[in-house]
Image 1: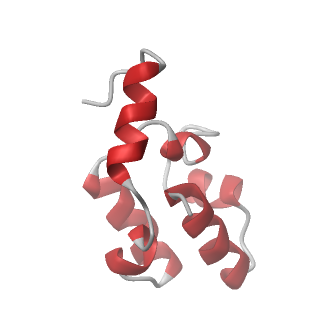
Image 2: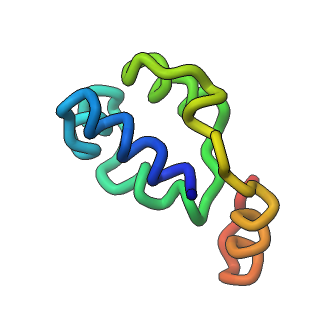
Length: 80
C-alpha cells in the first residue's frame, strides 16, 4: 500500500475528501495524489496525520519508500 492510499483511508474514516484536506491544509490541489511518486516532506505528512487524527506510523504503514524513490528517479522527478 502507498502513502496516498493510507491518506485516502484516513480521509474516508473522517468523511473528508482528499481535496477538502488539501484545501484545509493549503496544499496545492492534487499534491497528495502524487505522494506515491514524490516523497513529501515529513512536515507535510505530520500535518496530514494530525488533521486526520492519525499517528505518523499509521500514515506510513506498509509504505516502501525505497520503491517510491526508485520510481521517481526512473521517471526523472527530483525527490529532494
